[in-house]
Image (cartoon, rainbow, N blue to C red; front, side, top):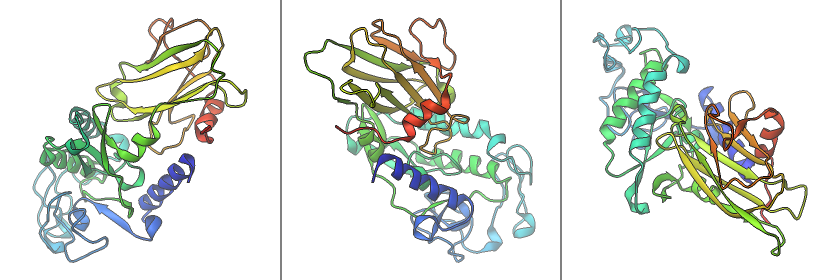
Length: 333
C-alpha cells in the first residue's frame, strides 16, 4: 500500500470514529473514562463503563460516572450529576477550538519526554481527541522515564474540556497501533519513522551536487506535528530528488540531504507541516513553504514568519499546487 493510500485509510478510520462509526474493523476503541482503560476495557463494554482514565481501571457501573473534572467542582453521582465541572465552565462544551491551553499542555509534555538512545527507551501511550502520532489509533510515543500518570492527567483534562465535562472519552479506530522506535534521538512512531528516512534518488553521478540542511525554528506552536520535505521535480528526469520527514520537537526539526541539489539549478524545495494531523496536505488547514533559488544555500530555515528571507523558506504562494506534490505518490527509484 502506498504512503498516500495508507495515510488516507488512517484518516478515513479517524473520521469514521469521530462520527461514532466502527473504524476500519467495524469497532471503535474509547480512549478515556467511558469505556474503561484502553487496552483493558472492551469497546462498547457497558460493564466497566465509567471512571477510569487511560491506562487505569475505573470503578464499574454508570452510577459512578463523571464525578468531577480536575480543576472543576465535584458533581453528584449518576447521570444527573454528569457535569461536575470542567476547565472553562461546568456543563459547557469547549470543543477542540476552545481547549488550546489543555492541548498545548499535552503537546509540551510529549515534546519534553521523547529523548532516547535506543528503541528500548521508548513506549506507546494514548491521548485522543485529535492528539495522535499514529493516525486514527490515537497513540503517542514517549520515553520510558516519562511520568505517564501526569500524561494521563493532562490527557484527561484535555478530553474533558473537548467534551464539555460530561465525558473524558474519545473514540479511535480499532487498529493495532504502530510500535515505538528511537529515531534521531527521539521516540517516534516506527512506521512513520521508516517513511521519514531521508532518501536521495536519481541524478547523473558526474553532476556536481550541493548538500542541503532543511531546519525548522521557532515552531513551538506546532509542537509534535509532522513535517514532510520534498526536493526536486519528478517530472523532469534525471533531476535528483530528495525526500524525508521529521517531528517538531522543542519548536525545531532538522533534516540533512547530502549531495541533493544540482549546482546552480533552480530547484523546487517544499515543506509541509501537518497541522491537522490527518496525513494529507490541506492548503487551507496546513502550513506549506516553498523555495526555488539556484544560488547555494547550505541551510534553509522554516519559520512561522520569515525573519529576513535570505535563508528562510517562504510561505507558499500556490498552496493547492504544492500540496498536490505531497498528496501524490513520490518516486521510489
